[in-house]
Image (cartoon, rainbow, N blue to C red; front, side, top):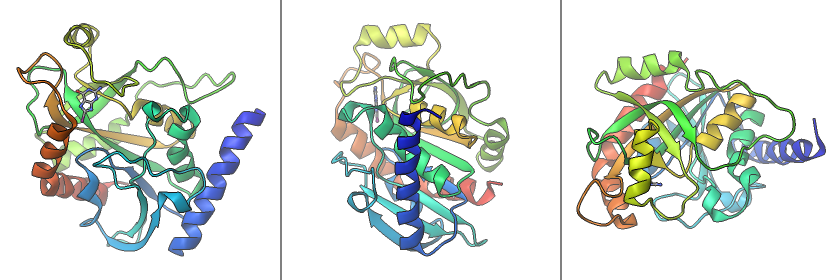
Length: 270
Ligand code: 8IG
């Protein structure tokens, strides 16, 4: 392991220890990262055993984006498994670098997690997608021009979004369509020309998270499930300009539906 990687995993181990001590559990089994629209999803899933502000966990930052909670929550599922809810995702556009983006996933791994559920709010690139639709991520396009990995770490990303977990999600919600998620660095939305380009190269949804986290997770041996909540048609696919307010409103409208869906899926995870 390189010095840089050692630093990353030491910080993750410190963060994991803080979370385990504050929650009084030996390990976490499942971790969830909640994106735009998904913020309320945790509450119905299990019993809250601890809520920790991001500022109290080494390497985490309250990111100040409305629609993101800025805290980490420990839950106990009805079957006794422990879930870590990461409501404090760091985005690449915050400018803290790719290690800060990967830190939540590294922390989950250091806390014992083997299964990771990544959720996000996304723009619909596929013109068939409706606002409010949830899409099961089948694959991604990492268009950030960076990797969370350093050195000669040639990680295979075939079936990065585990077939087994996607099958479970479809059993719970047969209406879910699968699609390819493109991560761009943001923070600006795309131009209509960029959306036409994304359509050409095979993207169905576009956002500013998830792909880098999924790569980190795979490098650590975690199983990944990804879910996109379509909050807006991507640029040029509707008459109005895009706004963050639109994203927040779509999230509010879908809150309880997303919570129910995610609860059902998490309860069925192996
Ligand atoms: I929510 O249309 C959400 N996040 N890049 N484009 C990008 N990110 C997004 C979008 C979108 N909607």
